[in-house]
Length: 341
Image (cartoon, rainbow, N blue to C red; front, side, top):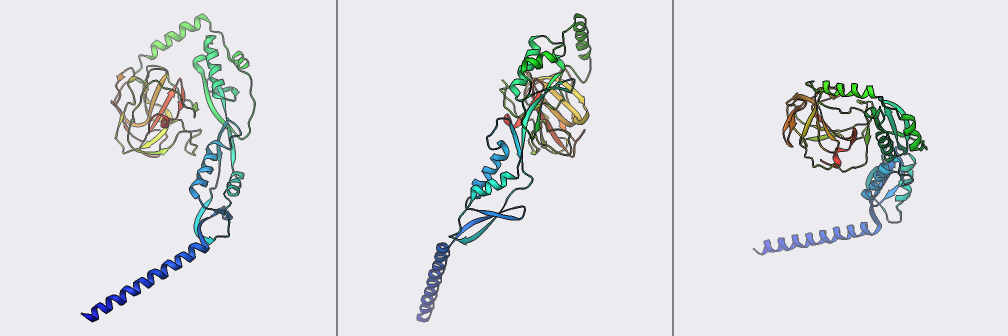
């Protein structure tokens, strides 16, 4: 028994000595060294930073809004991002977060947004901001211009900021007087379109989009639960322009529900959308459900919020089963993530 107690005491002394030694070593390391991030860009060392998350957040804010030099900045393109490696360095080495940020920013290409006014999908004039574009459209409405139904707004991007024509000039150049006989023709056209099985009203498939947020005046629910695979406004080789909606991947055949109650404006096949359902709500709001495999509703039909209207598919310009979901207000697409998801 005595021998066992001696062994226990010896072991405890050893553990205490090891603990003290470890503590001293860690203390010395902490005294002479500090954990820090080694930052490289394109394989080149550009400095050291202590707070990786703070620096990266500042870089991402720069990519989103630029340096705040202009309200017209759409985004900043960075082809490469900095790489962070945690290491221990002598305390004498100082961090240079601001210099790292400036070196990363130097690599950025700033894109400025402006807006094209289109007539029958042809660009006719350009303005610097969305509110001005809306004023032009409203001006044409007030003047009862004959081409108002064919006027669209498209957000575009350039690497140089430019000034554009005044609102009055654009309205004057786009205005077309409406002859009486053309009014009769258009009414007849609208009546005939209502007899179609696929369409019961107007809707837009243009690339008009805006990154601003407007009030819809209605509440929406998620039309489907799944993984977001492509976000609003993204640019990809699989499409010719910025993404006007949100792609949500889900199993083929999954039920797609109406995000809000309304009237089905279109139900059928529509080019790159594949099988598409368009539901018209109040306040000029429409929701689009694309790439469907099955359509359960017809044009002119009234649907309630949460009602199953289609099934997930991969028709049209699609690389796999998913729902392409759009929210449009008066033909202009807005980011669905500002309202759902």
